[in-house]
Image 1 (cartoon, rainbow, N blue to C red):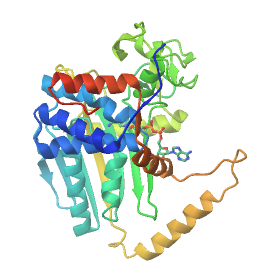
Image 2 (cartoon, helix red, strand yellow):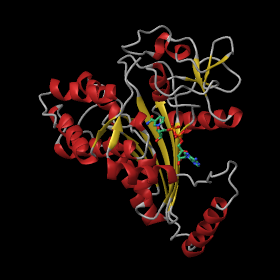
Image 3 (cartoon, rainbow, N blue to C red):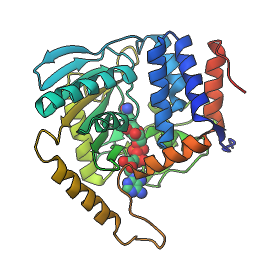
Image 4 (tube, protein in one colour):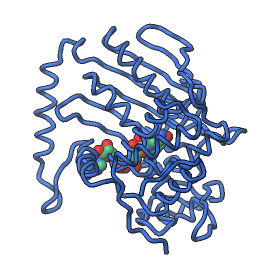
Amino acid sequence: MADYTPVLIGAEPLAALVGNIFRANGCDAAEADRIAEHLLGANLAGHDSHGVARVPRYVEWQQAGYVVAGQQAEVVTDGGAFALLDGHYGFGQTVAPQATAMGIERAQQHGTAIIALRNAGHVGRIGAYSEQALAAGLISIHFVNVAGSVLVAPFGGTERRFSTAPFSVGVPTDPPVVLDFATSHVAEGKVLVASNGGKPLPPDALIEPDGRLSGDPHTLYGEYEQVGPRNPANGLGAIRAFGEHKGSGLAFMCELLAGAFTGGGCSGPIDARGRIANGMLSIFISPQHFGTEAAFKQAAQDYVAWVKSCRPAKPGGEVLAPGETEARLKAERLANGVPLQPDTWAGIVGCARKLGVTVPN
Ligand code: NAD
């Protein structure tokens, strides 16, 4: 059984190390730092599955040419308050912030904006783009899919048809409310952790080809060695969509809007080069332009307080608004360091050494 005692690394040295890895891998300094900040941000928010654990995979993807350094999101269609951008398989941490910056600028001009982004490298934690819009005082809604990744069974089915298709909404209250999740019952990263002897999966997270529900990672990965790679292509089962028919419906819409509508493609067999790409359809709304900002903020604030005042279901429990767990963890991890599983840390160190990057003691 693997040792799961986490290694604690300070946020700053961790970001510096990851930035140096991407510099050594061929990114310019600004892009390398952006990738590092984004991945660290996911760890700070508690979404370790989308944090620095991704470094070795991102490095391999870049070396294989699946993701390309130095790309700019190219405007394919520009309608003023709407635009379609092509990420040309650039780093998601470059082209998705560019798309979001354009959405913010256009919404500040027109009151609302819709930006469709296709062919982005892995964009990571979607809440980061809601937070980018929140910093400009905007509401934003993001439908995302993963072309070339099919892992999730639709409600009523046992075969994979959806990606983990995440969805995020940010609302500028004080503090802001940020909803951000995958539409799969669990993220694939959580199946990976469970397969290594980490936190077990809920017993109904996965589904076998015969319709039996399962919490056993073998359902997704098939046979695997205790230590070694896990490949979802080897398993016969699927992750279930969250929330029965309703969550499955939301996943469906993410695929249609972020995949079919943007032109990046819905989830499906991995492309001939073996790469995945995110599509993202984002809606930006400026409350100021609607002339409702003050009343909206007051009503939202009051409502958040009222929801949170709800009697907890369990003694000592608490009702939280979306985004609260992330904000709390961020404060805690900035102060005390980021806990990494030993195999995650070993993977980053191994990657750094291969690229000749010094690892601080
Ligand atoms: P999750 O299941 O942890 O859900 C997170 C959401 O639930 C957040 O909005 C959080 O504030 C809220 N939440 C958590 N606990 C709560 C509580 N007690 N009360 C009220 N609200 C609560 O998230 P996930 O599905 O595991 O997704 C993890 C991350 O993976 C997300 O950041 C997502 O964007 C990312 N993701 C990215 C991709 C991609 O292709 N780029 C694909 C899938 C997921």
